[in-house]
Amino acid sequence: MNHSVVIIGGGPAGLMAAEVLIQHGIKVDVYDAMASLGRKFLMAGRGGLNLTHSEPFEQFVSRYGNQKEEVQKWLINFSPTQLRQWAGGLGVETFVGTSGRVFPKEMKSSPLLRAWLKRLHQAGVDFHLKHKWIGWNAEQSLKFQTPEGEKTLQADLVILALGGGSWARLGSDGAWVTWLSQAGVQIHPLKPANCGFDVAWSSHFRERFNGQPLKSVALSFNTFHRLGEFIVTEDGVQGSLVYAASSAIRDEIEASGKATIWLDLLPDRSCEWLVEKISKPRGSRSMSSHLEKTIGLKGVKMGLLREFVPKDDFANAARLAAFIKQLPIPLIAPRPLDEAISSAGGVLLNELDENLMLRNMPGVFCAGEMLDWEAPTGGYLLTACFASGRSAGQGILKWIGKKEEC
Image 1: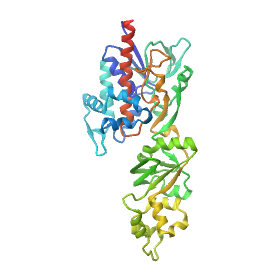
Image 2 (image 1 turned 90 degrees about the vertical axis):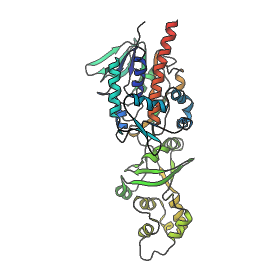
Image 3 (image 1 turned 45 degrees about the horizontal axis):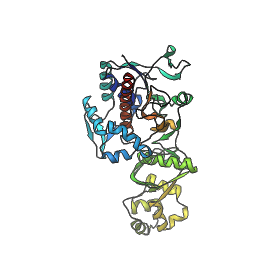
Image 4 (image 1 turned 180 degrees about the vertical axis):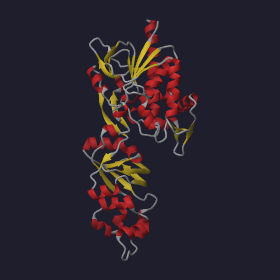
């Protein structure tokens, strides 16, 4: 019996599912809304494609929080090590950076994507671009918006790999939520993940320090504590250190309407050392000059002190030192979903069976970021997207096998 599969979404999850299926002689057609494939994947590689991470597997799995048990099933099937081997099979050598993150040696995503698409095309995968999926019609045919108008397509086997809701201009606009909700699929609302946050800066601080990096600081929030850096923006804060804590911060704001992070502006100095240095006579020097000369604190860090420390506390060395070691930064709200690196929420995992098929829609499978899981940056997002696509492809093979046995 001949089988064919329609895959909607040409990102890592959809393309990996296509690879699994075409290798087993299944006819595969990939549909994507954009004019080219892998737009968000290419954007992820602009600063050096962080493909995966080299840390021990148990630690790697722990990065997926509440959904780690489900995501682990995908990762056992396609681990970070296997992902590196797969990239090597495309002629893309990888290396482990000083932080444990794994990158292609060329530090780009385009060579990998080109080699992959070439291999899929040569294997027989057909690609249909500028085809935006807009749900099903009354006969349960797939509907697409195309430059030539609306088209319909009957398909018995479908993989939806439509991405999350961030970076709409690259194709991940979350429009699929409407169509699946109408079909009775339960979906957690899409929320920003790996995102920045708004801060009510004074106009002076905003104008003076917009775009300035905060380096060598420690950020604490509840049980989170990590060294790193981030950027002050016109509206608030963003960058790797903020992204790492963003899930917990976002949930706190959602629950209570606000959240406060705590910064250690000089994490390599003790409070006692700071008190001793700050207590030295400053003569005719301004407080800013005094702090720069005695403890090396200046620029945006000094600006933050001026922004959040009461004026009278600058005259008290112990109080000022305490603020330097634990400066409260009140956060108002996450930045909009479309600005986030990724999204949380999506199709509830208990809506899917062990093969990633929707329980109430036989023959329709889901994969990638559109599922209800999230992960920090560091290669975790991409790895799970690849792995879920592989699981969905293998799930279709199992489904076909069961139907043929019947």
